[in-house]
Image (cartoon, rainbow, N blue to C red; front, side, top):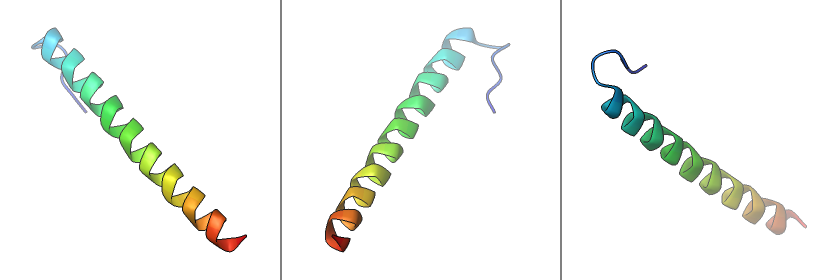
Length: 41
């Protein structure tokens, strides 16, 4: 996905960014799921 050999710092920044984006996406999915389940009850 990312080449870490050329620039280790850039690689680290990329990994932090990716994990941040993933956690934001998971939070949105969980929020949407919670709203749906609340509506179904």
